[in-house]
Length: 74
Image (cartoon, rainbow, N blue to C red):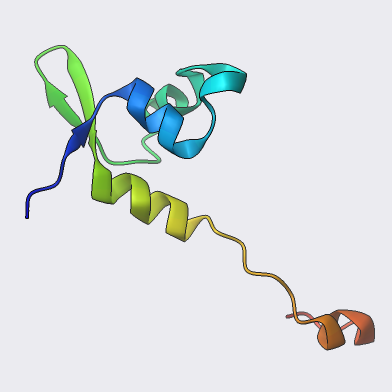
Protein backbone atom coordinates (compact mmCIF):
# COMPACT_ATOMS: atom_id res chain seq x y z
CA UNK A 1 0.00 0.00 0.00
CA UNK A 2 1.44 3.37 -0.98
CA UNK A 3 1.13 6.49 1.07
CA UNK A 4 -1.14 9.15 -0.32
CA UNK A 5 0.53 12.55 -0.73
CA UNK A 6 -1.57 15.32 0.81
CA UNK A 7 -1.42 18.98 -0.14
CA UNK A 8 -1.09 21.63 2.56
CA UNK A 9 -4.83 22.33 2.64
CA UNK A 10 -5.63 18.63 3.16
CA UNK A 11 -3.08 18.51 6.01
CA UNK A 12 -4.72 21.55 7.64
CA UNK A 13 -8.11 19.85 7.42
CA UNK A 14 -6.69 16.60 8.84
CA UNK A 15 -5.09 18.49 11.75
CA UNK A 16 -8.29 20.42 12.37
CA UNK A 17 -6.68 23.83 11.89
CA UNK A 18 -8.30 24.81 8.59
CA UNK A 19 -11.10 26.97 10.01
CA UNK A 20 -8.88 28.85 12.47
CA UNK A 21 -5.75 29.53 10.48
CA UNK A 22 -6.15 28.07 7.03
CA UNK A 23 -2.84 26.74 5.76
CA UNK A 24 -0.67 28.76 8.16
CA UNK A 25 -0.10 26.04 10.76
CA UNK A 26 1.01 23.27 8.36
CA UNK A 27 3.16 25.77 6.45
CA UNK A 28 4.84 26.78 9.72
CA UNK A 29 5.51 23.10 10.49
CA UNK A 30 7.13 22.79 7.07
CA UNK A 31 9.17 26.01 7.42
CA UNK A 32 10.44 24.99 10.86
CA UNK A 33 11.19 21.46 9.55
CA UNK A 34 9.00 19.96 12.28
CA UNK A 35 7.30 17.65 9.78
CA UNK A 36 8.75 15.70 6.86
CA UNK A 37 7.61 16.80 3.42
CA UNK A 38 8.18 16.13 -0.26
CA UNK A 39 8.91 18.80 -2.85
CA UNK A 40 7.30 18.07 -6.21
CA UNK A 41 8.55 20.92 -8.36
CA UNK A 42 7.25 24.03 -6.61
CA UNK A 43 4.57 22.09 -4.75
CA UNK A 44 4.85 20.73 -1.23
CA UNK A 45 3.24 17.43 -0.33
CA UNK A 46 3.15 15.52 2.94
CA UNK A 47 2.71 11.78 3.22
CA UNK A 48 -0.45 10.70 4.98
CA UNK A 49 1.57 8.46 7.31
CA UNK A 50 3.75 11.43 8.31
CA UNK A 51 0.66 13.41 9.35
CA UNK A 52 -0.63 10.43 11.35
CA UNK A 53 2.80 10.01 13.02
CA UNK A 54 2.85 13.74 13.86
CA UNK A 55 -0.57 13.46 15.48
CA UNK A 56 0.48 10.37 17.43
CA UNK A 57 3.77 11.93 18.57
CA UNK A 58 1.99 15.06 19.81
CA UNK A 59 -0.90 13.32 21.54
CA UNK A 60 -0.84 14.03 25.26
CA UNK A 61 -2.03 11.16 27.41
CA UNK A 62 -4.24 11.93 30.41
CA UNK A 63 -2.75 11.76 33.87
CA UNK A 64 -3.83 9.11 36.27
CA UNK A 65 -6.22 10.71 38.70
CA UNK A 66 -4.70 9.22 41.87
CA UNK A 67 -1.16 10.32 41.01
CA UNK A 68 -2.30 13.87 40.24
CA UNK A 69 -4.02 14.16 43.60
CA UNK A 70 -0.91 13.05 45.49
CA UNK A 71 1.32 15.49 43.61
CA UNK A 72 3.18 12.72 41.83
CA UNK A 73 4.10 13.26 38.18
CA UNK A 74 2.36 10.84 35.88
